[in-house]
Amino acid sequence: MMRGRLLQAMQSRPRLRYSSLVNVVWEGNSLVAGVGATGGQTLPVQCAAAAPLAGSGATASTNFAVSGATWTDISNRAASVDAAWANGKKNILVLWEHVNSICGAGMTAQQSATAMRNYIAARRAVHPWIVVALTTLPCEGYAGVMTNQTIRDNLNAVMSACDALVKSSPSAYGVDALVDVRGAGSVFVPLPRA
Image 1 (tube, one colour):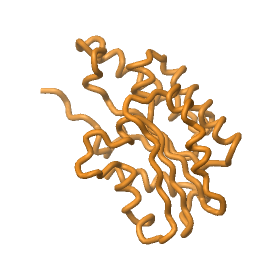
Image 2 (tube, helix red, strand yellow):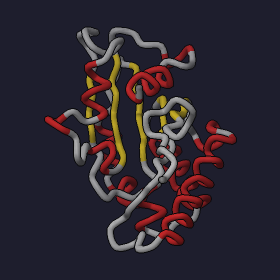
Image 3 (cartoon, one colour):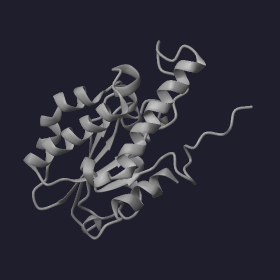
C-alpha cells in the first residue's frame, strides 16, 4: 500500500511520468535507511522492484539515508545527493525526514518545514530535481525523549503541525508531489489505543 501510494505520487504530474530512464535518489532518516527492514527490503528497494520501475532496464535507485539524520545532517552530506544526478535521466529526489529534526533536535514545525524547503532550494540550485516528500509517522517512542504521554502527545502535535504546513502548499516548500503517510487508507495510520 505504501509503495503504491509513493509510486502514485511520483507519477502524479505530467513531468513525473516515467520514461525508460529514471534516476531515483533517496534521502532521509531511519525510515528510508531501512532500520528494522527484513532482508534488506527497505522502502527504496521495494519501490525500485515495483512497476513501473521494475523492468525499465535503466532505472537507478540510490539511498543516502542514515538513521538518526536531521535536516542539518542531511544538508551536511548534500554533496553526495548532488553528485548522484544522472544527466539524460529523469531525476527524482525522495525525502522523508522531520521526526529527528523535531523530536531529537528540538525544531518547531515551521523550522523543520523551512529546513526542508531550504534543502530543496539548495539542491535545485545545482540540478532541477523533481522532489517527492513524505509526511511524518505518528511516533510512540523516541530514545530518551518521549518519556511520558504528555511529551509524546506534544511532539506528535508538532509533527502534525509540520505536516499541515507542507500539505497546505507543497509547492511553497519546493515539493512537487507529497505522500501523506497519515492519510486515509495509509498502512501507517495507527489504530486507536485500547
